[in-house]
Figure 1: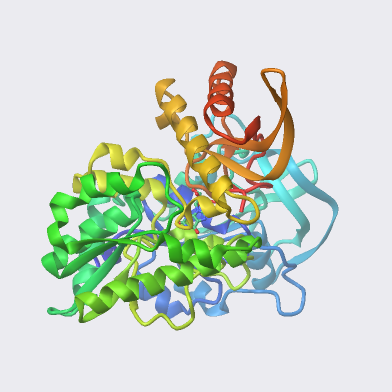
Figure 2: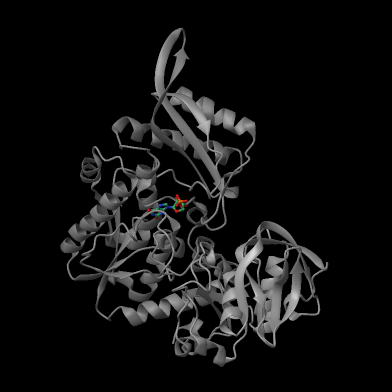
Length: 517
Ligand code: XMP
């Protein structure tokens, strides 16, 4: 049994809302383990998982439409606390004898909800009227017997409903636009489900170590793909603690690295791993395979598949390798549309998930695949990994290839690498590096006219992107001082060849993503 099996746990049933995982995320922020599970999870599995409460997520369908996802009816017999959110409210109403229909007044965006503060769900709220975020076209028309309204909005008499330990809200408490969303979730998790705050880095580590020990045989060897970032470093450290020198770390230089990355890897891992650290320079192979390729998904597939071939080359030399360990995160899995839901859409193929070839030749070990980046950082810190590494900005596995729009050429690669280094240097100088999620320069094929001395010069347009985020599923552009943008721009145009213009990307995610490709 994993240590987390005995934890308080809340299961979030996934009905396909794009941000269903955000509910998990928020509950984990409260210090309680939450896990996204398929909407049709069997009651026995819920019991096995030792859940103390269930949340029904939102979803894009109508509960009354043919084939709409609905939970197994028998899960109501478990008697566990339930919180339905949006579609989740409608599912609860629909399955328990109430009626859901097309709303005469649809609600999208902010709404004032008047709540009953004597309901455990709204206990301790300072005001009766609170701003909530709504997004629904259907609504409950008739409540099942035993249910009553504990919240109303201008357009809906059933903005929140309750019956015993079952609650449901038509709004989304998991989004930051809902003013008291965290308090409402906390009321459910602590007040109704009676969970304790015990999802800590220590437990996450115990869990991972136990799982690894169980999975890997006592004489088996593992190679771990190092990328220079915190996720793979944490994966390697966990493995090292379990299997010692049966772990081999492989760092593949694909020619798309940040400036100075290869030197850094030697200094962080060289001493720890000794001869079990292998650095393979396969940059020529990667770059030649990328020649002429413009499509971003194709680039990702090529890189993912070549990574595996490079690892295979190394593992053949070492001999007897069965397992490939990767620092895959939960967010990589969601964005690659490989999560719990059968309904999520593919945003991009993260090289380590959907970029992998069908025939892998290794068995995969991914001890961090249920964690978010900030949880991994907390684990890394508990493991004693260097602070500089923990604070390094995330860097995509396919490297600069996804920051180069269109074909990866020598000139664009040079521009991207040099300009990115300048962005990071200037940000560090200004003391803002640790405040932002990522900062880099991207480049495409757009050319713009410039002037040098008295001469006309045509060069590339560089896009500077600096974003703030908590877990990379949503992000906003950073409002850095103009003076910083000015120094970045002037250094790039002065120091990087073939650049005439510098622009700043001011799109948030959504609708944009963090990397351009
Ligand atoms: P996007 O661009 O999808 O990125 O908003 C979200 C976060 O993930 C990183 N990213 C990747 N990381 N392999 C990775 O290991 C990948 O293929 C990949 N694609 C994007 C990105 O840098 C950001 O932090």
